[in-house]
Amino acid sequence: MSTNLRPVPSVAPRAVLYLRQSVARDESISLELQEIAGRDYCTARGYEVVAVETDEGLSGRTWSKRPAVQRVMDMIERRDAEVIILWKWSRLSRSRKDWALAADRVDLAGGRIESATEPIDTATASGRFARGVMTEYAAFQSEQIGEQWAEVRARRFNLGLPPTGSVPWGWVSKKTHIEADPDRAPFVPKLFEMYISGHGFSAISAWLNRSSATTINGRDWIPATVRKLLDSPIHAGLVEYHGEIREGAHEGIIDRDTWAMYERMRKDRTVPMKPRKSVHLLSSLVVCHCGRKRYGNTTKARHDGTTIYHSYVCPSTMPHPPRAKTIATWRVDRAVGEWVKTLPLTAAPSAPDLDHVDTETLAREITAVERRLVKLTEHLVSGLVPEPAYRATRDSLTAESDRLRAELAKAEREHKITPDLYLAGIETALTRWDTIPVDEKQQILRAIIEVVRVETDSTITIFTRWGSHVVINT
Image (cartoon, rainbow, N blue to C red; front, top):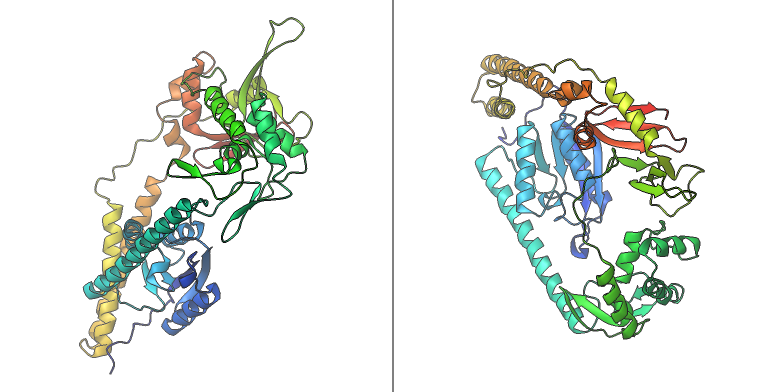
């Protein structure tokens, strides 16, 4: 009888397939082939595929920038799946640190990671060692690719080409050179002329939005986009790499005098941000319905110059519905203040005594019990354990696993954050809300509010830090 047979659980383990198509051409394996291999692997082992998550065209080094891999890890930690299936071990990450963190997170959650094309039994020390060798090799390949790219970029720079091949708006990158875009390049000298004549990035972005000049991704122009565009020395026939600027192999579309004048004015007009106390209650918390963060604005009435108006203004240069771009601060501040007064002022419950409940230890104990179940089944198949003894031990281990899972779930529920925990310690301040200073109010609001969104009809939506939201008419 073969000793390589796997146990057949009473309920099929739930698997989530994680697919990643690399940006490197030599390993850009089709996502379809990865999925087929993963599904075949699951079928052969009796796994139920509950989800397929894909990161397409993303590097294995950028862990935090891959949304699908984050969703996969969340599924394991929420126990929506027990197994992560990869095409190869390198699909999850090519970073040593990220791999170690991912493996630890999955182990603590009682899950596991398996490869469809590099099957390794990670329940054994030798299996974990083999997986470590493969992930180390993946990290080595990643570093080798990085070194090769560094050499390529340095060589391109020495040839007077943009090191990364990326060019700003107004240019087109070819394999051996770059050239001006005939449709967009004529706008660039005008933009430099506007800045040198005194226009700011906001005014320039507004002018571009009114013109026929569209951004590369089709979105509206914003000041940051214009600033990045004009800061590129490529327009003057230069290239930059690691702070060093040298002559480019291309002809510029502005002359060097214009570039030098822009650099001088850019430096002179750059004002360092100074820490200050905002007079606007919801400073940094208010956003527009379009997604842009609103800023507090103060103006004086034109007729007498003494009356002061305060408002929250959206900086977007795109058209807004009537009266939706600016809203008086008092309307939003009053609505938020009234909402604050409705918050429950009962003292927050004392934190439960969880010193004896270590969720990390519970998770490890659950994993250990499940591994013992796997080993027990292997011993049954190999004839080392008689069936009556197997059934008795299996029932005992299953009961122990269920008990540990229930204890872990209880501990997690007790640790769950509630509004009471956010409001703990500020009940006194809330009872005298109308009399405390603005800076103290700001500290309280930033502790309990995620964001305040102004809708198109001037209603506001308050999103709290404990996950709820409320809509208020201003």
